[in-house]
Image (cartoon, rainbow, N blue to C red; front, side, top):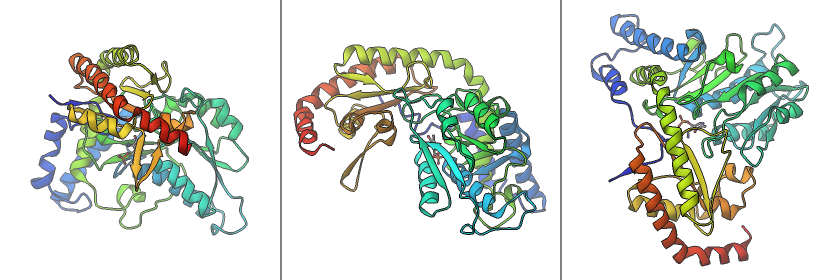
Length: 410
Ligand code: PMP
């Protein structure tokens, strides 16, 4: 029996979604930009999906831009807003070059964003295009509106705070942050990466008070390689990919028609799933309770209260995350860790470090993310197998690891 507890990484495509997509591969294969009937058929399908997406966000269809996923949406936000700033989109002022004497713009984000936001910001900083403030979350993994307020400067043009953190599942007070941002300076653009939120939380962009919002279809039982960016009307953002005039000239490239159809179908089904939220919360709480009860030296990471219904993230003392994942996989359980070994150097999760975990604690982390197919029985089996695996790993590697950290102070 295989148990999938990595819904935060990706979700299976829903059968209805799959069925809706199928005709758009081999039968209805037109290019949506073509003027003939094949093109119009594809275009109609895209516009239907655009409406489904816009309705979910209580937005207008013209405010939805389809992209290849949240990574692209987030890159478009950071790079497109900076490009618009330097080219003074929506302004009659003369155009200026990035290095001419204009105030360097300031962007506020958080230290535990997804790498696509963090690295886009770091690149902008390195290229001298922007000054960046990375706000640290508190030890529970929460960003306060107050900390955003303190970071705002005269030259702040963009604030980007994720809605739900992908590793520890903490839910940020987006509405409160928006109120602070908008009351301090009405011109600051406010963006949220809602990739991990839209399954479970209200994403009405007007209630949230956001100008830009990123999402990805494969986290909501839709296909991979397709996502969207909500762009509030008149928000200054320039395209960063040149080519055709697709997506209101904001994102060039032939449309991924079947993907867009899948995204529309997946997002339109989300409301029906919200009834299942309670079941998920009780499964998650059962999982957390049992793990903390049955496994010694286990700790829950992130907030207990402000937490996504599908997320449990633990640290186990004297455990190496990658070994844990591999052993669990052998037992038929798919999970993930904040420990990643790349090119021989151990790189603990920036999210776990940002909430104050020591590198060795971050290395011993485990993320279990539940989804709509998770059952009570799966949770019971997982707790049993996890206990067994941790016991055997501690016997083998506990001593070795603690010696390693003592000697290397990683
Ligand atoms: N942001 C967050 C919060 C995510 O969890 C992910 C996916 N792990 C991304 C962005 C990137 O999304 P995509 O896979 O669609 O590029």
